Image (cartoon, rainbow, N blue to C red; front, side):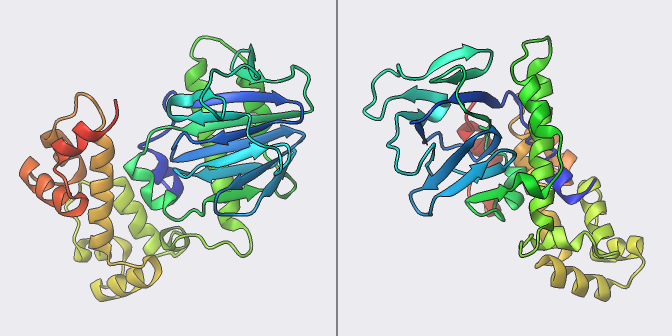
Length: 312
């Protein structure tokens, strides 16, 4: 399992909010849904994305944007167009003064807009749940990432556009997986671009020694790893692994493993039937007490308090 796949494997899209918007100018939407991550893909036409803290960025046909929350932002035909729609948590849509929305209407399965034949069509996929496993990834992203359509050859946007309007059995699962694939493909393309600054753990995956060590930790977090046993598996000395790992990843191997285990635990605790003891065993802690102590030291709350605070 590689770096991005392992970091996304826990909080994959599950009933993600997906919508096709068909629009004719003037149009403008202010997004205040506080979602941790949103994918915007331009099928045709263009749009502008602006935030309260950054300049407007234009999106053209084929472009994909990744918007990291929870700060609000706007998507419009022109940066000067005032918002007509405000999207709040839970995808509640109202006018800017809070009244019931009338200008935008449903136009079919997962489709809305102000014109059935508008020149602009965009797809929006929103990850509504804050997944702890993805925090090492989300923490490395700037507020807005734009992948120009001309820079990559991906069939995923047309495929998602075709599937989003279907209402076949199991369609929600199909769309969730397509959204995941589009996100991973966009991240991979962005990390590979000149001038990009991928996180240390991503760059380290290309190292023959540290990359192998990361793969072992990601694949088997419950194993009773030590620096010595990890070094033996990758064929170097303990001192060499510790030095090389810290230089490339930015922290020692056991510190990285601890955070990885706690992130996995936080994600597993979201499952309704999970117990602290069962989660502890899955992530490499010998008892619920050991996990609770480490979790509270890192997160400031106990596993049970954390689970009670997570939205249903």
